[in-house]
Image 1 (cartoon, rainbow, N blue to C red):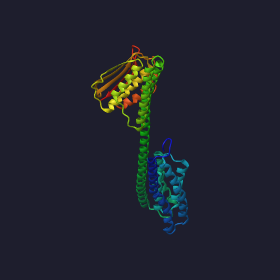
Image 2: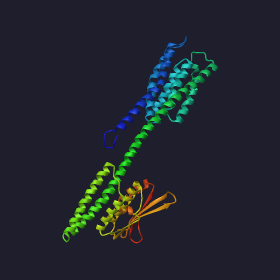
Image 3: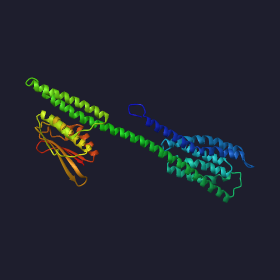
Image 4: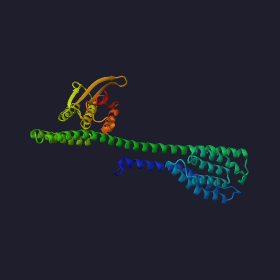
Length: 396
């Protein structure tokens, strides 16, 4: 389901897949329950002379709650609970032994135990399953005194061996069904988790974009509006011109937000440098741009460099009293990643001496994530002369 809304179509389809797969697995495993219920009936209808009818009826009466217990254990196992309810599990073991002891034919008795083992061995952790397996291997030999038949040890050993082989075949089928369920469940859950992760990543990307867009635009609007306010009385014409620029900036900011919401926004590097240069100049900060002329970049790398410039200038406006700002683009070669572009935005009068993260809010964190996703690195630090330097290394 979505975080704040109805389930998506993909979620509904995934849930339907799991329900269908669950029913198929339960149906395939229910074959052993049918065997448990039929074995006492077979002995009751095909009993030899000297057999008591009440004993297979007792076994049938035991097989019914035993089948119910196995169904509950199967549901618990399919729902992901590896440790079953102790009363339910050990109760099924006791019922299986009682039912097998009540049967008189060694063949039906051993196959009764084998049918339970072919499913029940997977309902508990391996250590418990191994202990129960050893007990069930010994149990048929303890039933010999209660059988009305004359037991030939060699024939009994052959039947015992046959029952073991049959139980292994049943267990292989049960294991394949449970393994198929685990794979299906993991695949569907993994698909849902990947979809949720994609949604989360898109939300983070959108949050970074909106912060970068509005952070710069609102800072520029604040600078222009403050300047217009100072000029309102002594230079009305210039104040009017500044307010016209405020209006234009607001219009551009609104357009940028709209295109960001639409998902088609790209940031132009040259246009961004010109825009931030005019804002800094209006704030009384001299701007020096180096290395931009003749710089050929792919659209993705140009957009990333523009984000670095935008965040760097936003920090200059918010967190400095700079009189000069330098924006430098330097192509270089890194021994690890090859050709890179070094983008530096520095100013000469940063406020305070705290860590960059403490003064720059979420902007640098979001930019760092953006640069890291492209394989680059970002650093921000105060310089020794009281300034501040934002430096990004972007692979080309």
